[in-house]
Structure formats: C-alpha cells, structure tokens
Amino acid sequence: MREMTPADVPAVIEVQEPGAVRALAGVFAQDQHPFPREAIAARWLREIDLPGTDCFVVMHEDVVAGFVATRGDELLHFGIAVGHWGTGLATFAHYAVLGLLREHGVARARLRVFTGNGRARRFYEKHAWRPTGERSRSSFAPHPELLGYDLPL
Image (spheres, rainbow, N blue to C red):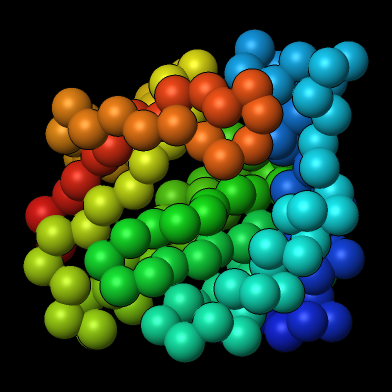
C-alpha cells in the first residue's frame, strides 16, 4: 500500500466501479442508480486533501489493485479489483490497514457496510468484525441501509 495521490483517482475509479456494480447489484440497480463515477471521483479528491483522512492505493505488480481510506478509528472505504477477488490480496490489505490504525493509537476500529452487500459482510465477519446494531443510510440514492461493525485492535 502507498498513499493515494490525485493522479491515482482515475485508476481507483477503474478498480472501484466494477466491484461496486457487481457486489452492490441488489443495492443499487444499475438501470436506476448507475455507479456515480464523477461524484465518487470528486469525493476521493476531497478526501485525499481532507485533514485526518488517510487514503491509500493497494498495489499489485506496480498496478493499482485496490483502495483504502480511513478517518480516525473508521475504515471509510475498502475495495479490491474484481480480478483479485479470492486471491488473498484483500486479506493482506485489510491486515495492513489495521496495522496503520494500531500505529495511530486506535484501540477499536469501526466501519459501515451496506446491509445488502453480503460479500463484504462475510469478509468482515470472517476477519472478526462484529455488528454493533448501529444503522444509518447512504447519502447516495436510493439511500440504502448501512450496518455498523467494530473490531477490537
């Protein structure tokens, strides 16, 4: 992993879009709510410069293969290119980001995941994250439900 720069954002979007479309097909129907490329790219550019938010790219053979963003004790965004699903790269990146959180003094990490994203929920639960019962809504239409998870570090 390395810090994300504005120049990385197009490659991050190329990684993020196919995974989001595939994993979130039941959450964001693409005929009604297509992946918002411009809004997501703008969000990444804001977050790269936002104090207290750390954005990283996951590299594999010198190519962007994933992305991570954290803010304080929260894992904001995490994804791996579809072509690397099931290879162990996500687990490697997950442990790397947990190490960074520990280095920053975080004792308990938290995240939110779409209720309808079974793949992500299975991944996090396999890696000892536990649901907190906290529920919220996405800012993106149709405003699907997000579930809170936490993990003692």
